[in-house]
Image 1 (cartoon, rainbow, N blue to C red):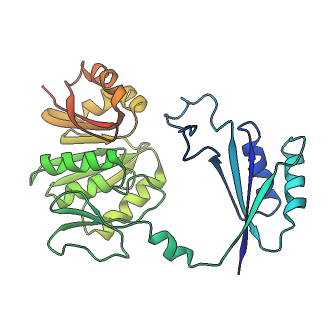
Image 2 (cartoon, rainbow, N blue to C red):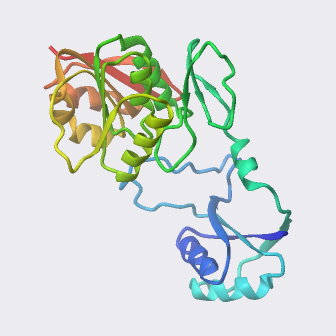
Image 3 (cartoon, one colour):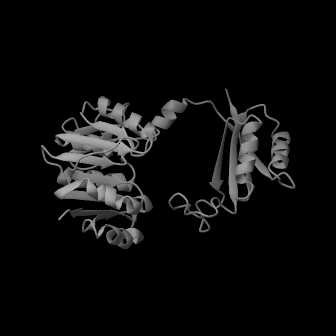
Amino acid sequence: MAWLSLGMETDCLHAEALADALLEHGALAVSIEDADAGTPNESPQFGEPGSLTRPGWDRSRVVALTAANTDAARLIAACAKQAGLATSPPYTQEAVAEQDWVRVTQAQFEPIRVSARLWIVPSWHDAPDPEAMVLVLDPGMAFGTGSHPTTRLCLEWLERSVTPGLSVLDYGCGSGILAIASARLGAAEVVGVDIDEQAVIASRSNAERNGVSARFQGSGRELNGQFDLVVANILANPLKVLAPAICGHVRRGGRLALSGILSEQTGDLIAAYAPYLPLHLADTRDGWVCLAGVKP
């Protein structure tokens, strides 16, 4: 079965309303993109939750996937009116052939080499190196497939830091990848915690798939104890707010690593943690940093 892709341009004030209207009128999927993507006028939308006062782009491109027999002009006219646009925006249309979308999606995710001995491999791939330590992980609802620089920075820190018998806390566990890696590297006790219950469910499933023992819990349950190693890959603002709690779970002489931090946020994070634990720049990649330190 073929489909029809419709693309139209509007501004950030009407893009979401237009997308909602298209979905209400039967579009199968709708995306909003930067109409200037790939040009010098491209405007990346970076920032933490709440930091963007006006999300979206002045020149937004709305793309809708519809049935092949859709009357495009009529659909766009109706949706433009519903979205509060004075006139229908100009549009493009393109036929989309039926594909094996599962196979197409899977093809986008290849094994990731973290180090000489550590690989992250989707379940539909064979391990490139049969002698390597393999973490089996599929893309899912929870953050952390190993492709993001912050995840890589934390994995590399864990590989340098975990020795058999240590205890590890993964604070903000996402997919559980850091906790699972810690267990594979020889940690005796591994705990992961996250505010998102879906992340907790995903982490448990991923740990079971990898045959490791780790305990995962939501933030509604009290987290007790101190650990030899604590790693938190979240975002700068939550990391600052959570500084007393995170440092409270690091035992004296234990080590802490933080990521999810942009290079320009380094000073603020070091200052926020200074009353509890001295941090230094441990590593950096693609504009992101990993901070680490030892609790006195």
